[in-house]
Image (cartoon, rainbow, N blue to C red; front, side):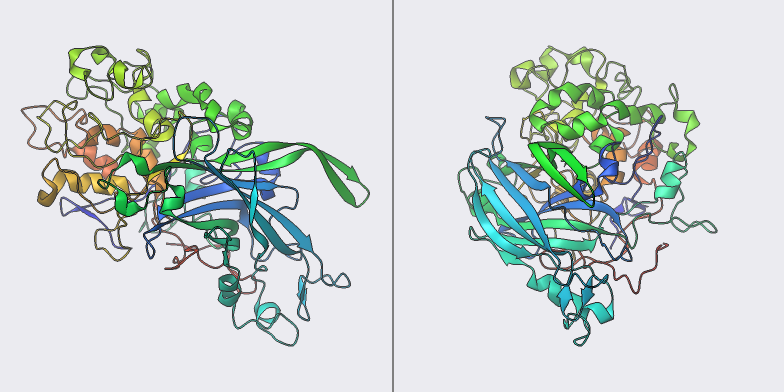
Length: 584
């Protein structure tokens, strides 16, 4: 992937969002993130993506992944979707009710075609052959319409004799033909794919969980290792026309500008099981009400924001009830390890990341400090998003919630195109509350954890030399430093369609979130780091800002490519050819 240049000499390098957990080890984006769900991999959400389709920009692709750490060699009972699970994708396109505006529900069935063998595939027949039905609701789950019946889930990618051999196996030309042949067109017009794929997430798990013992890429000797390399997961991917997701059925050509608030959606995914499982000799039965056991919206929420004692409860709750968790976003635990007055010195792997303690000489964003509280109710915030008349007390709730002004909206409401949430470009030095350059608007004030996407933002081509896995952060740097964008106009900057404005497969969400916790979003809007002095410093591109943007934790990209067409995720790794670990 081509790298984005910052001031012609700084690369924005990926990093894993590491957490020092006091009582439980967690994994990856949402892999085994809570005690209960770690024992139920078939129902475990791993990642969620939502992006404007790069080859079909009038559509949005939503990818919900499940079943972590799927070994390609894990036969004879290979991982597959569960038969007593409801897998659901939930979509909000307006904030007027707590119910879903659109819901897709997937349920799976299995058939053994040859009960006389222990093989998964033999003589053209397949055991654990999986199919699915997809239902759609547009009234909050009151009524459902089946839009795909008997959809095909490709078999595991076992090996050449099982897949390609026409005498003893399935006789397919190649595995990709099975994957392509499983793409269904729903009766309502969506494209749908369900099946095993390469896990697109990437991170040096071993270094991260050795107390944030990061290993920069290129380090000689003990090189970083992608802990998810060569593992598979199971994906539910849908490609939906934008007008079907927009609240009043508008096509994207009707957008008034590329930040049109009418085109903002919120997406989350879940898995539910029947309440009661009864074990018998050689079998089990399920009964009772359906209970949600897993969910995901924004990546890494349950891993690094929600404490271990609340993780299972969080998995079982609806985003409509997420206000109860707001305090964890206003004072995120991870920030303690970027603060030398707390535990920062105990975590040398995060030394480059330090939070503003005296931004513009006044504002302290360390946990438990005042942040922007001194401005509460003042004339300075009148007409901005921090005005109580705009959004009540959400963003400035009290004098001890400094990150309610940045981390909370990123995760809970989306970011509005209002001051102060505009780039410092065009703002007078030292006045972050002034109007600046618009660069994001995915505001959907449901006060719940969702992946929010403004569907009107143009696609950044994957061949664009400025395409970056840093997403919105890369767009912010360009908007601040590139002369072509030295204005306050709404205009397309490369990577405005990246995380946290939705999430592309290429986006290194761990880097972006870690840098956000260390205050980089505050810096982007003019709340610079402590080593910048108004009227004295030549540039806000200070050593502290450079340290944050230059942080490198080792693994900078996925272990394989992505497809250029739907479902975009790559075919699953083959068991017969499997090697466990890739090094970079």
